[in-house]
Image (tube, each protein chain N blue to C red):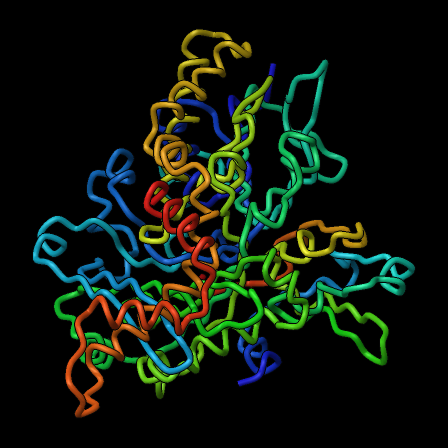
Length: 90
Length: 430
């Protein structure tokens, strides 16, 4: 099973109006390591044609990227109003 | 006049325990949880050890949603080709139950209900944005444009404490303070699990491995815990090693673990029920911030109260213990009519005498050992080589163990000086 298939078993209540994590594209563009792409367990950070693509919708709210990014690009907040990942087992 | 005696942020084991205990003593308590329902944001690293919950709920072993009691503890190493483990089973574990596998959405839901039954006001699906301050004292919480006031705030946010960090109550998280936890819960029938793991009558297994098959200095532990009719399989990944390598995907390590030739058969035919990730506090006592201040206390994972010495992993029991200590402090403040800093300091005194802080102090610096190349590279390879030397029948004359060991030592190519230094550290710390 690849990561996309694994994520597909999860339940999310996605907030279309609020991205709880944002990145600063100008910093990501010149980033020498893009460690976020390796660290994020939900593969929310991907390099596509050398450009960082971030998708908050798949986030499982672990906080890894906040620690992983050593360049200050990641702004991390909790989703609002019970939205985001909804584990059934935990 | 505050609206509440205490506001608790986060309804995990720390927060729900604190709220329940305070409310039982007549305090006016608000428990705020961002997940809806409680537990829907939380992930169990496995086993709830100890008897902390009995202080709150003497009948917890009958009424809490526990999966299996742990009768079988496995600790071992995995290399590309081998599984090396100590498989410990004893009747003592069956008579005196020391730990249970749990799933957090169920457990935390139960804990939050207990807090509500005790008289707390529980609100879920509400994200606290920050703390309200007045004259350098925390006086409540902020949510949107609202402020809710309280004499005390108990922070129980978990391993990714946004408020504690945002408000400057603890330093940001570094590579050595946390590890990346990833877990898969796989559905199998109760009967199949019993047969595969040789378990009966509600008994369960807790297994932890050092993943010696990882390359380029990437380090991770793996775990398998049996639940009633699911298995929790997961990895805990060292961030520093992953960063240095910068070519290994964390989610692929999870895959490598469950695809290992001697792990995969345990999970075969099982259906993936859930994939999850969570930070695991690994920083030890040096990562524990000041536990209290004017108007607030920090509990559980938010305070880094988690511990692993490579053989035992503790977290939820420390969380419950710290929640109880915070509650007892709040009750004392309420009874004395003073919420001054020296009264809140009582929490720190209670924690200094707690198993959590004692364990963590006693094993200060243990993560240097548990994440050492010795544990993750040398020992797995060395043990594999020695065991092959002992058990592999070549038809040639047998060698003495010492001879095999020396040959294996050479084979690992590990620097001897480094080995002596790390070996000495391991003996001393562990």
